[in-house]
Length: 495
Image (cartoon, rainbow, N blue to C red; front, top):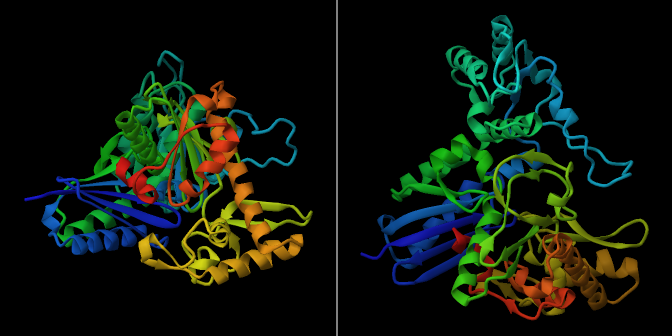
């Protein structure tokens, strides 16, 4: 009996689903994401694929998943109610950070608010030195007070991060035991287990983020696994990690911090394997979706890894070069640069009369104006439809009808009239400007790090990537462009 592997990648606008059979048979589908409950789109898509292929749920041998649920929780500040228990005198480490700002002399800079409010950052008396030797014994009365406060305030998650606990976890382990005894329903992460390394800010931030998103990811994955079981898909669910590896759903629930960039990582993994098949060891990748575009490098046949990165910060340029713009995560990740440039990116004329595109996006609802879902803003997709770069009557092979006249009206009302130009000139301006924004991401991973872009081939994917490929290649003087089969769902192949 033939078996099918399923890859699912959730984006801000569409959810991509790929069925790959043992004999090479492929079914690829895009469906609108459901931000109120992302699992609904995934389950509907898998059920639809099973029905379309004429197979049974028992013929699904594997389901691999990349998601942005954790990232969205951080960016939108919709994570769990979290408390931090730390060494006396260090409750404000999340405020102090590393005293970096993204741009020198930026007097308007505002750092992102901490994920744990100050009243929930609790201190306990204790102190270890860097060797793990006890300089001040743990004050157990402080621990009891902190745990009682957690119970009184209805805290969902607790992060425990004490100074130098990587050298001696005894104090953290005691606090964990008290919490387990007195507050068994609270999610708990201790830094000496999650990240037993020096650098107290990075360790604290990583531990806090794990706690902040853990209940959100747990709820989502539980809904998904329960839905798959009800459907009859009785196979383990695996989740892409930020470093390009796969983890079981249970590990992802316990340590979601390792899966923050799971969706973007899947695309780079897919490009890596395609490059090996094509004999292309040097690739520059660009994944342009509905909300953002992600750039990365494969050099000499190897994906580049970063030991840490930031999340929830600026994405107007490659944010890994803008230290201090987001929340630090000390976990391995495929090295990416990200910009707010996608098919749903909104084009506006600001008060100075200048055209801007992104980072705001129309998202899945209402989406670009041409989607006929009530959107009024001009988007990159509307510009590409008006220019004829996209089919003017339908997308997704005819499965998704669009209205080119609505695209024209949105471009005319929001861009052409304010700038006193024709609709086509305005659309081309939007197209060119978004290319410029994405070019900055490609330069961030290449020329700004001492690499000559001309040494690389450009592989573009995502729903909007191939439309902009040639323009980007010309901008960077790249001689060869690769567009993979099924580019709109290519990240799902990487799973």
